[in-house]
Image (cartoon, each protein chain N blue to C red):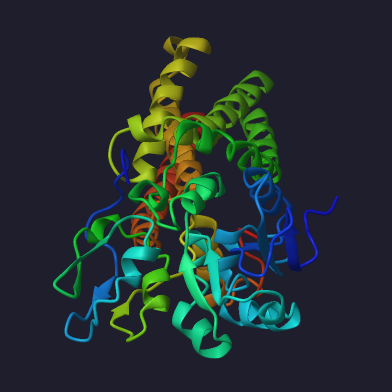
Length: 96
Length: 296
């Protein structure tokens, strides 16, 4: 995204190029232009721009893409950690 | 006050069987913005039940999702109303909707049109082609500004509580004036982290939100030092305030990752694993410094 870069080398985005059928759906759904398409194969051109929203993985018809998608806000993660350690009742989140 | 629109099929203008079908959430603002931007046109609008939540957040939670879309296609009898089988979805709905799955289960094909409703007229006039600009997220000064009031309201309760405790503790250990000063320092650090951090986001150093927050906290420390006559403070007190303010601001700017349009879950996790222990440690050192000052 123009003018903004987040931490480098943290995104869990993976693309299995052998499985890719080149439909271009990942380019269509990605709001950060992470993918490019050449010769009927998608490739990851800018992994560090990925915000792990999961749209590409969900919309890939051959499941060639994996990413650990989910809530990315601090409050949400603190609540998640507290719930994992049974320090807080499940349910309730940062965004309703 | 209700922010929900009943889900179902709506008409903008007087659409015919071959006119386009747009899909949106039943958050009233999403619905209103789409209707407004498409005034004077004839299109169908299929509104999904997202319980008054906007498209992007609802997609993240899965309520703006494959299951709801397929159900709504059936319950609205869309197939009987229109002659084609193409749905136009907002790009930010894609984290919840699996296009090929919708197609398999309903027979309707999904095209992701644009991110912003404002681009829809151009998209439709364009022969339904998405330009690169239409699929690029932004995070402008104004887009950040409008998020801040909600952040402030959400922080109000815990901040008032912690601030009150801080005021009483310092007042008991020292005097009332010091208590009020400590409260002001804390409250200013919170405001710096919630308001200034997000507003100045692209100009603050580094990619890390916690570091950006710490930087704006340092700025507030400098201001507070001049404002409250810092040259009369003892060394331990000065050091404690110098450490505590950036830690507090950093926490609140880090929390803004939840509102940002480009931070990843893994990135926020990494930041928090480093930043939270550092903040905790720093606040502990501050407490020790202040107690030592008082007791020694």
